[in-house]
Amino acid sequence: MADKQALHATLERANARAWGIATGLVLGLGLCGATCWLVAKDGAQAGAHLGRLSQVLPGYSVSWGGGLIGLVYGFVIGYALGRLLAPRQPLTAAERSSERNKHVRLNARTWSTTFGALLAIALGGTTAVLVARGGDEVGPLLGQLALYLPGFSVTWAGAALGAAWAFALGWLLGQVMALVYNASVARAEERIAGG
Image 1 (cartoon, rainbow, N blue to C red):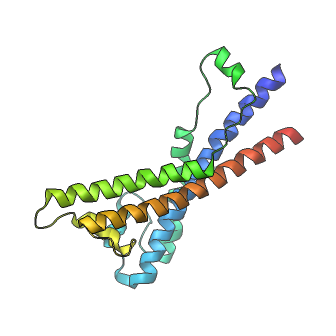
Image 2 (cartoon, rainbow, N blue to C red; image 1 turned 180 degrees about the vertical axis):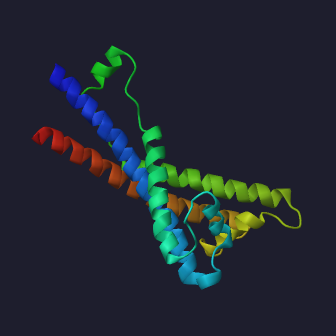
Image 3 (cartoon, rainbow, N blue to C red; image 1 turned 30 degrees about the vertical axis):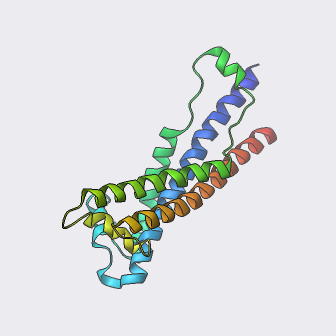
């Protein structure tokens, strides 16, 4: 019985670690990719808006080296967030005993579809609200997304196009997170079974 409890505790730690690694990789690679995209696209005058991150991330800049520093910062911040968001141990003894042999895996299709849909609703909805609200300078900061999402603008058509882009990117990120998470849990289970 003590061996099963030790195994379960180890898998719970692996589960939280897997969430951290998956979230860290997505956030780190996302920041690095966004930085490198701007540098490749616009050169030295690239990304004043993204460059503002240097105020909270010392050493970061919109440059090739800054992309690598952003990768590290993104991974560390994402790892911490993933650990915080990881599923927790059930509270009661009955819940713990019923969960003893279940090691959560992410269904990549469901996870990525949900993640993509949430991002699409967030971007499409925010853009639509700004357009409906109107005004002379509607969403200048949100309009900066056109640097990353070709064709996006703060218009009704831009809201639809932005939602499509957000869904596609969210779906892709969801697939990567599920892949990394499931691989981390499988590796932890193999390590426990072998040793």
